[in-house]
Amino acid sequence: MKKIILLMAILFTSLVLVACGSNRNDDSVITFAWWGTSDRNIATYRAIELFEAKYPQYKVQADQSPWSGYQTTLNNRLNRGTEADVFQVNYNWIYSMYGEDYFMDITELGLDLSNYPANEHTPLTVNGKILGLSVSETGYIFYLNRSLYEAAGYDFSDPNNFPIKTWDDLMDAGQAIQAVDPNAYAIGRLDPQQVAMLMFTYLAQTTGKALINSNNQLNFTQAELVDAFNFISDLRSTGVLIASNSIDTHNDGPTNPNWVAGRYGGVMTWNTAISEYQNTLPPTTSLVTAGMFQQTADEEENFGMYKKVSMAYAVSKRVEQSDAKKEAVKTFLEFMTTDPEAVAILGVDRGVSNNSITQNILTAVTTTDFTQTLEWQGHEFVQRTYAAQVSNGINLYIHPYYEHATFRAIYEAPIENFLLGRSTATVAATNIVNRFNTELARVIGG
Image 1 (cartoon, rainbow, N blue to C red):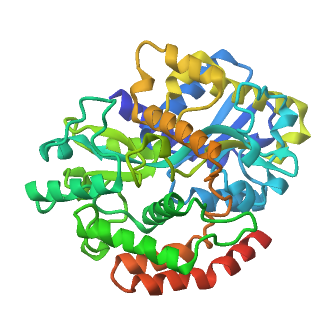
Image 2: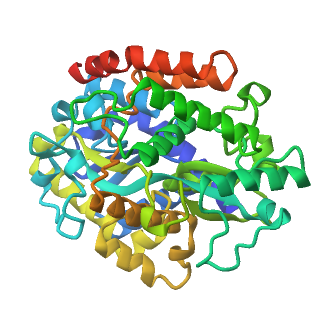
C-alpha cells in the first residue's frame, strides 16, 4: 500500500511540474530532472524528502522520466531554455549537446572535488570548464546466470577459482549447457550495441588498440573487423550466442522472456545497469560477476574492458545568474553525494561513486552490505582492470562521440544486418570502414 501511495505521489509531482514553470526563477526552489527505474525513482524521492526536512529553506521540484525519450526531451528543453537547475546526463552529452553553451562550470559552485580521483572529471571538462559532477564510472562486463551454469556442472563456490576465464572456456560452457538443454545458451541474445562492444573488446585484446585513435579515426583495419565478425560466428556456433537474432526479436534485454525464464545464461552490459537484468529474474535465480573473458587464463593479461563516466549531474547555466541559486544547488549536490543518510538511501542505484567520502559511508552501512552487490563487484573489477590496462599502455576510455545518436548507426547498422543474416562479415566490415571516419568527423564538427 505504501508503494502505491508513493507511486501516486510521484505521478502527481510529475503533473504538477507542468504547471510550476514559474518557480524556476525562485532561488529557494531547485528543479531536478533524472531518468531511472522504479527502484532509483523511489530512492531519489526519499532522498529529496530528507533534503527538504534538513534544509526547510529549500524545496525540490522533481522531474523523473524513464530512459526512453529522456535525451530528446532534455535537448529540446536546453534549446528552449526550460531545462531543470540540475539534470542527470550521460557523459557524452556534454559534447553532443554543446555543453559549453548550456552547462554551468561546476567549479563556480565551490564544490570540493578533492575526494575524487585526480582524473575523474577530465572527461567532463571542455576548455578548462568542468561541465558535470561525476556520479559514477562504469564498464562493459559480463554477468552470468549461476543457476544455469551450475546445472551444466560448473562450480562457483570458490571466489579465487572462477571456472570460466577465457573465450574458449565460454565456448566450452555453451556446448555443456546445450548438452543439458538445447534451448539454453551460455549468453543468448545480445543486441547490436552489445555486440559492437564485444567485438571492439575482442579486438582490443588481439591488437592492443582502442576503437578510435588519437586522430579521431577508426583504429582497426577491414581485415581486423572481419576477424571480429568471425569471432561472433564462433560464439554462435558453440552455443554461446543464438544462431541468428531473427529468431528472437525482443529488443529489451531485461524483459526478454528467454532471459526471464533462465534460458539465456548471461549478459554483457554496463555494471551500473545490471540491476535491470537482476530484477526480472525469479528470486531463486542469482547472477555472478564474471568480468571480462580473456584470450588466455593469465591473470596478469586482463585486458579489453572499456570504461567511461556512467552519468553526471549537470547544472544549467541559468544558475550562474544568482548567488542564492548557486548556493541552493551546491547544498543539494553536496547532500546527494556526501550526506550519510542520503547516500545510504540512494545506495548503488546510480552506480558506485569514486568519491572517497561516499564510498566510506556506503561501506559503513550495517543494514545493507553494498560491497556484495553486483554493481559494487562490477565497479571494483572495472577500476582494477582499467588501471592494469593503463599501466600496460592501453587506454580504453570510451570516446566522447562513440555513443552519439547518429554516429553509432555507422557501426551498429552493419552489425545488426550481420546478426540478422542479411550480410556477410566482409560486407559488414566494409560498410563500417567506408563511412566511419567521415561520419565521425561530421558529428565532431557539429
